[in-house]
Image (cartoon, rainbow, N blue to C red):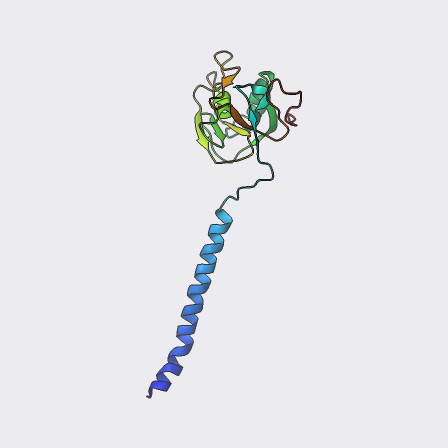
Length: 182
C-alpha cells in the first residue's frame, strides 16, 4: 500500500472528524448565545437628580412563586396603597419560600426602599437597566409584609437615581411612570 493509498483511505474519516468538530463548536456557541441575556437599551432607565426616593417613583412587578392563589394580587394591592407603581402582577416558575426582591443592583435605592416592606426578604441583582423592581412572594405569613416599620422614603447617597422612563423626580413635575395594576 502506497502513501497515496493511505492518504486516500484516511481523507474521508479525517474530513468527517473535522466537520464534526466544527459542527460541535457551532452547536456549543449557539447554545451559549441563546442562554445569554441581552442587555436592552430600549427600556433603559433615565438617571434623575433626587435627594430622597419615594414609592411613587418606583415601578414594581409582583410575582407569585407560592401555592396561594391570588397572593401576588394581595401584595400588589398593599404596595399600591403605599404609593408604589405596580406594572405587572403574575406568577413565576421559581418556587419561593421567603420574599425575594430583584433589581439591577442590591445597592440601588429603589431595591432598598421596596425591601423595607419585606423584613425577611432576600435581595438579588440581575443587572437590569430598566429601573423596575421585582417582588417574588411565596408562602403566605403575617411576617411577609408587616403593616408597620417600612420606609416611606430613602435617601439617595449620590443624589442621582435611575428611574423608569417617564418618571420624574419628586418636586420636578407631575408625571409618573405609566403603570397599571392588574
